[in-house]
Image (cartoon, rainbow, N blue to C red; front, side, top):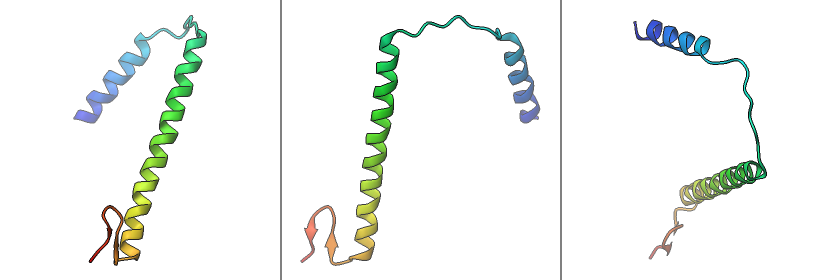
Amino acid sequence: MRVILFTCVTVAVALATPTTSAAYLDPASGSILLQVLLGGVAGLGLMVKMFWHRVQGLVRPGKDPEHGPRG
């Protein structure tokens, strides 16, 4: 029932929206897009780094990646 309702609403919204648009992109738009891309790359790099430290912690059980050597 929800799938049918969702489909009907999606089709209604798609038919109600205009097919053409008059958009203007100023120089700041490119700057914002660049910031979004660089932020995404930085976030992805941090995520990979954290994941890699966890993998190393599993492979090398003698060292805790956050607190140094155990002992």
